Structures are given as structure tokens and as C-alpha cells.
Length: 457
Image 1 (spheres, rainbow, N blue to C red):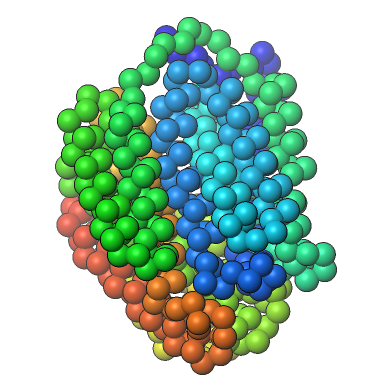
Image 2 (tube, helix red, strand yellow):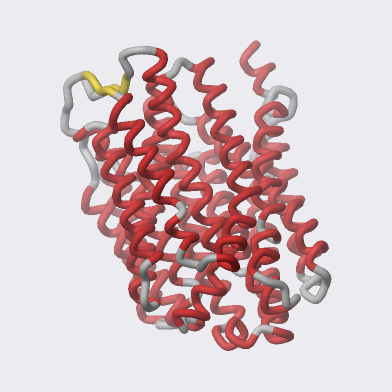
């Protein structure tokens, strides 16, 4: 049998869970805090032409690392790997704060992202093993609230730290919370059971990592031979994974309609949402002329809208089919990105209001697609299908960030003003095409019974 996390008493289990939740909070807080500060970072480090890479490398390593952390935890235990990942995240954060040039920052962000992949993946895995189904639903609801708090506080905190102290403190602020999480998990989470080697497609995983890195780097640097080589490498990884008995990604399940639609929808939705969210602070500072605090405030409605609608969706699935929820979400996303293309010269509050609706669309579509994929997956492939859907969303985010950098242009990012506004309009058009395509794919899903009626039958 494999190792299983446990705690010697309910009190210890609660404290261990608190440590895990703090780790999830750090993961959620990081993107919103740092995105707010990034315009100041690139101005200080003179990295306008590399604006997308700190985001892209973080997403890339977090994306590729997540399924690897999950499978590797079967080999050496979840607690041990969680602590290793947490230390990597904290070390990456400290190095980001001390960065003296963009190369240093990009490398540190890659390390930070690799650790972040462990924080989220292993936290959700450990919670699933610590609690029964009824208890787990309450813990997951609390974790959703943590994401909401980070969405509300993160951008404002990032703007305040940047303007009153330095952008470096947007990275240093993670350190005390991270140390608390490490102490709680190491002190109160126990593991028991025998360990057994877990079969893993290491060759396929390596090809996925190399192919993804080549594709992202080639897009950012406009080196098209690298892009082609990266796509060929990814195709080779898919071919290798398809023949492996225990692939990193659930290749067999992804041939079925529902998991495949969830995979595509998360990839396209992630590309649109995370690609846009990386550049909204530039809109606040470079187009409307606001400061870093306003740049943070513009992200808040999107993040809060996603969180609140995710919580609402968890209740609506009892009465509304998952297919209808996902279609509603993508329809809302399509309408909002269409509206954004006409508002690049509008006041900040207009973009914030539309951003809140974009977050709502993500909340409806992403959660419902994940639940639909899990519901259709065989019990033995549930974890693989879940990690595959999350992999698609994160990889889409990394690719979307790089593609939108190409559309906006490094010169527009540097000079701002009218040229930046028109670049953002092109990025919104790309996002519109992505979510519109996802909406078309979601129409293939058949509206099954709501969850409550399905369970009754």
C-alpha cells in the first residue's frame, strides 16, 4: 500500500490542514500580487521586451510540475514532497525579490513556479486523503473562500507594496506565510503505510517539458523554428504517452467526448483569461495613466467574479446540468470579450465591470467542465483526468500570455498610450476567438440530468 497522510488527533489534523490552506493561499496570492507590480519591475530592470517571460515561465514550470509532483508523491510520500515544493517556492520568491536583471528574475520565477505546482497539487491530494467526502466538501468550500480573499486583497496589496516600499516586497511578502505553512505541515501531518514504486512515463514527461519550453520561448522571442521544434516535440510526447500503460496524462480518457471537451475548454479558456490578466495592469498604468494601486484594483473584479461564481456553481449543479453551466459560462465570456474590444479607451471602471463578468464566465465554465470530466471518468482514472484538465488550463495560460505579447508588441508595452490601447484591442480579439471556439466545443456536450436527479436515479 502507499503512504497515507494522517494526524494523531483531530486538533493536529486541523493544524496540518491550516498549513495546507496557507500554502494554497500563497499560490493564489502570488499571481495577483506580482501581476500588479510587473510594470514597475520591468521599468526597473529594463525588460520591456521580455515582459511575458516571468509570467510564462512561472506558468510553464507550475504546469509541467503539477502532474509530476502528484505521481512522484506515490514514490516518496506526499508530506516529504510537499515540504520540498514549499521550500522551492520560498527560495524562488526570495530570489525574485533580490533579482538584479530580467534573466535572474525569469530563472527565479521558473523555480518559484515549480514549487507552486507542488503546493496546489499535493494540498488537494492530501485533503482528499485526510477527510471523508462530507468533510472534504466543507474544506474545499473554505479553500474557495481563500481564493476569493486573495483575489480581493492580492492586487491591492501588490499595488500598495509597490508604491510604499518596493516591487521587491511583492515577492518577500510570501516568506513569513510560507514558513508558517512549512512548520504546520512538518509538525502536525503524519504519514503511515508502506511505499511502493509508482510507474511513470518519464520519457513522455520529459518530452512534454522540453516541447512546452521550446514552444513558449519561441513564441516570446519570435523564433519560429523553435516554435516548430517545440510543437513536433509535443506531438512526439503525445504519441509516446498514447502507448504507455501509465501515462502522465490520461490519453485514453481524453479520447472520450466529455473529458476531451473539458480539456479543450480549459486550454482555450485559460489562454484567453490568463493571457489578458497579465496585461490589464499595463492598461491601468499605460493607457489610463493610473498608478500601481489602480493597476491592482483592475484585477480584483475578475478574480472575485471567478471565485464567487465557482461557489455559486457548486450549488447550481444540483438543479442545472453541467453542460448548460459550461455553455452559459462560455457564452458570457464571448460577449464580455467582444465588449472589451470596444472599450480600450473607456474609463477604468468600465473595464473593471466587464472584467467581473469575465470572471463570472470563468467560474461557470471551468468548474462545470472539471466536474463533468470527473463524473464521466472511471474511478481508477479520476486523478489522472483531473490533473489533465488542470494541465490544459495552465498550459493554455502560458501559451496565451506569450501569444498576446506578440499581438501587443514590445514597443507598445514600452511606450503605452494609444499604441498600447490598440495592442490590447488585438489581444481582446484573440481572447474572443479563443472563448468563442470553446463555446462551440461546449455545445457538443449533452445536457444530462442535474447532479441531484442523477444521483437519485
